[in-house]
Amino acid sequence: MKLFTFVLCLFLMGTMYNFWYGKNGWKDYKDYQKRIEEQEALNQTLVDRNNLITSEIKDLQEGYEGIEDIARGDFGYIKQDETFIRIIQKDDKKKNGH
Image 1 (tube, rainbow, N blue to C red):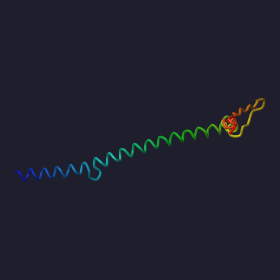
Image 2: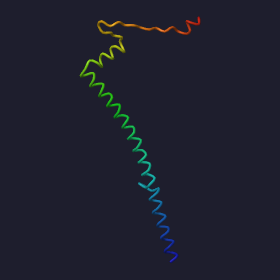
Image 3: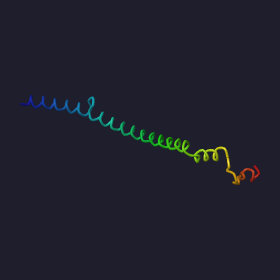
Image 4: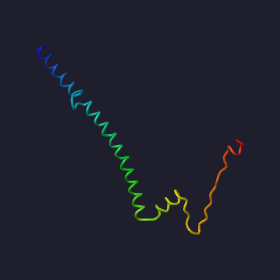
């Protein structure tokens, strides 16, 4: 009976070792689960970026507001009957005489 109990304990320990640390065991499962969560977060970031780019493309294709914003911001264009005012701040170095 002692031999049977000993063999049964060895079998149980071997099975538990495979369950926790063997191929496709609990440790591998947790590692894959963590990698999946990281990949899903990265995918969501990329989806959000793609949605923003798609929205910008749609704005540029359908309306002139996007083009107007780019022209005003990047090139300084103004509309007819608008007055362009530029505010230039003094440098502190010139003010202090340096």
